[in-house]
Length: 295
Image (cartoon, rainbow, N blue to C red; front, side):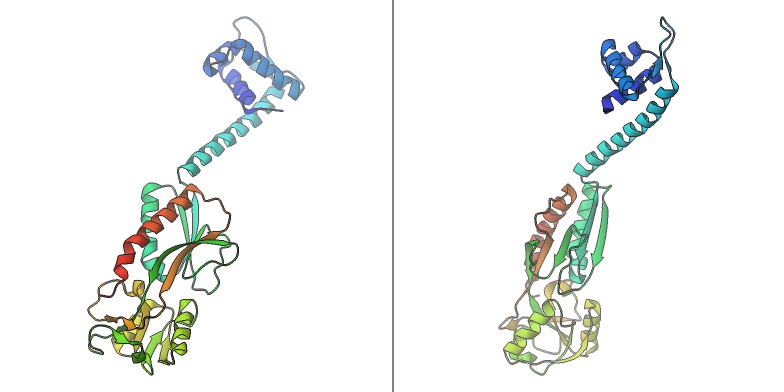
């Protein structure tokens, strides 16, 4: 069976034209070089070099040229594999991340920025979807507003509390009773993901707001609030930036907060890049958590 060290020796002898010079180049004894070439010749079934003797250089035979051609290709591929492994260990590999709107605007930019700073050669692929059922097919990590199901491990990053978002003049500043929402015109997300949990909570408390518009877009909801179409129940991360055109009100009793998790397939060994992404996400979530109090 061919070994890479045998093929390396074959290439060195062909390049140097001498067993002795090849031995010096490789740090072997000349007898070791001769033994390795003999092994290759036995496997190939014929001489790989013509040996004229004396000071004349050895010359590759036609059979040797065939073995050398394929041997150099194998050595090249082995070098590429070694380089790929080294780059993988350094974090310069590929990572596929699932995300959703709020995370894409808050947590994820920091994850991407710090990954690129630490691993300039990394390949980051992002997939954004609002869904009730997390599908991790083909993904290394996925941000999601809920626990994983069977076969999925999760890391809770933070609680994201809900506030009533209104125009500043619509209500007095400060907290409002939950009953304020009964019959109140609201603009809202579709009743999927955690929005369904919020609406179930309101119904359980006998509160039925009047939903006048639904959209997946956070910016569209906020634009409708500014326009006076209705108020909105939104998690704090969706309205994290300062905006004098909007007011945020805590509700008493409060709505169940949205929980943001990072998911991955159970039992999966993380690449160094994915492991680093998890640590960045954990740190970014810790930094964001104090900002989730009402302004």
